[in-house]
Amino acid sequence: QKEVEQNSGPLSVPEGAIASLNCTYSDRGSQSFFWYRQYSGKSPELIMFIYSNGDKEDGRFTAQLNKASQYVSLLIRDSQPSDSATYLCAVNQEGGSEKLVFGKGTKLTVNP
Amino acid sequence: GAVVSQHPSWVICKSGTSVKIECRSLDFQATTMFWYRQFPKQSLMLMATSNEGSKATYEQGVEKDKFLINHASLTLSTLTVTSAHPEDSSFYICSASSHGTSGTSYEQYFGPGTRLTVT
Image (tube, rainbow over all chains, first blue to last red; front, side, top):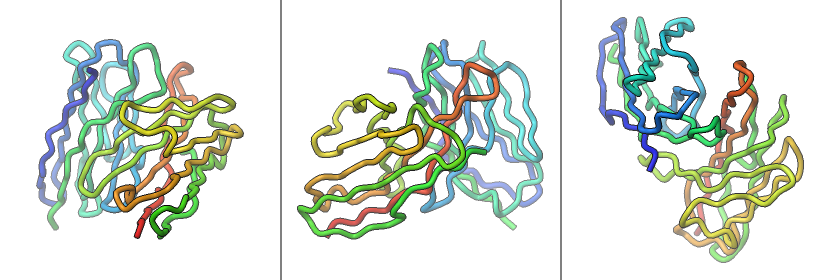
């Protein structure tokens, strides 16, 4: 059973701080890694994807991937109250499948 | 990013009736679309994978005769909930797969979802 694990939280950070969200996955053959943001009552929105080991930065967001440790993280710098949402980690299955396995999500609250 | 639409955004129907939900990729062709269901405060549950021109692949425990999926074109997939019952009330979300920037990867973009209430 391929699994993606996330700390369910809630994770609470003050406005302006760095929020760090973590995810581990069990399928060593996974090649693509995604972070989605889901506001309450809304559908998930793709905010970052990463395919290679290392860091990938996009604005205030940085995704980090370590395939040897089967670990992917998302850093949000200068957190804003509007970042308060549930963040879903998703990993594709072995062989480059389009099908994703989702974690249960980490609820982030940014306090003004 | 790629845009996916869903219609209707919400629907209320009576028990025993059928409801059709449409999912469209607006600015790209999607060979694969996915249908998810999400109950309040729970995680996404994949129901089925839909490929254009072929039968959908259902996840274990999902009744294919109850949840009919048709993927008629590269931009349209439909989910029909047949003989709906109150326990089918949920948030149904589709996603469409777009070929990624790396050449071999795919990125999944979600529609806004359809909230179904069966009375």
